Length: 317
Image: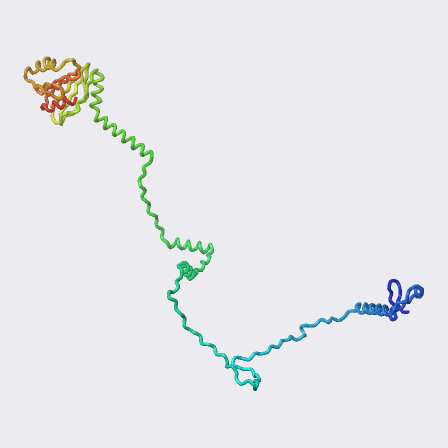
């Protein structure tokens, strides 16, 4: 038999039409195959032969096919009625419904609504026009504008502010020292007589003092003279040659001894005795003498001193 009419299954040849075994050597050994099996095998062989060939595509070409448009039943327009067959048994039909008229009246509330302040501010803020951002300028444009502005604007020198005087620490110290020196010099000048008398008293060895009172128009004539146990102060007039001296001498006399040894020897009975602040003052011929605390005080004068002035001098020593 030809090769194209046989089928080889498991190393055995079968007839493609009848399905019978072709190999005679094995025919006696195998059981006969039923016609149904042979038919099934023949179908399988035919299917294999069909699938080995290239088949034509059966896919639907959508480009060539027409688009299917679904049909929709059209509704009647407004105002049109459909033709409906009415039954002869129906005598009355319901009238077409009529829409109720709209009530356009709007009730006004008793109190009008008010806008909250926050909402009003928000609305005002939103209603403001938005200012568009300034167009950015190039560096050259900014430089040119600055140069032109500098050229056109006249240059005005700023007025120099007047600086107030400030006390520096050094100036303050110097001023304070200078003020102390001035005050010290003034006090020294004022107290020069007392200083001079104190120096002379220390040299003379007595407790001499400077009178706190002096008549107007007189001043201390420098220097203060002194000797052992004696200090002499001379006061001169500012207008003429009149003067008086205050002599302080160490002495152990009392008022009676002064009267006997000095006053009566110089003036006799022409003297005046004055009691002032526990002192016994003897005045005679513009002169005066008294004793106090172991010191004999004597005023010798060619100046017209009154008795009151002499008493003030005596009580101020």
